Length: 222
Image 1 (cartoon, rainbow, N blue to C red):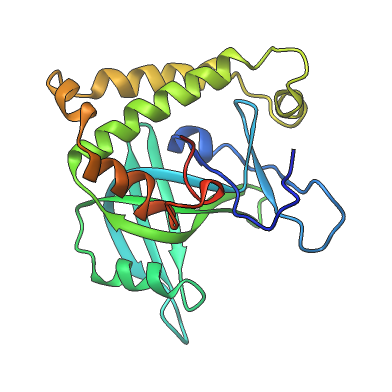
Image 2: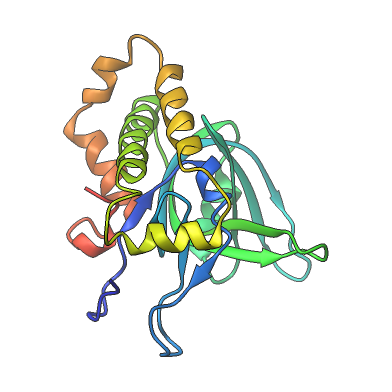
């Protein structure tokens, strides 16, 4: 399941409603440098995520140095991203952006437990790219498709991540299918032409936003 080659993991497309429920993390080896995965409730592992939404708020919450928090909304909920000195490009982008703005984000899931035992999920961004509405709409359509595919495969024999999700979460995957379908319904009637897009927009969403477009392991799911 994990890759032995030193390449970046595929960035999974996921809606906020599902991502925020992905509080269980795991590794697939005892190596101290083994990648950490978030377990998506629809039965998939995710070391990196790719999402597009509207940056609605940003705030420097650092004390001794800049540490930016961004609130990014998609049709199903809210992602929170945090970037500081170890994510200089993403932090600089958050500093310069003026909400509201459409952004594409590639980053790593992070979890932390509050004093009351609640697990919070956020993203440590590798890249933040300002995009347009057409790119956002294409992402919604593709992410809905991927989500529905994961739900359809949830009960397949041999789906190890789905088995893990059943053990770790008391959550119905059909909830995320319903959210995906609702997100599709929210797209304006005229989005069909926009979803076709052009090559430049596709390169932005699947290349620049993900890092090295020539590295298949570094890009979002095709």
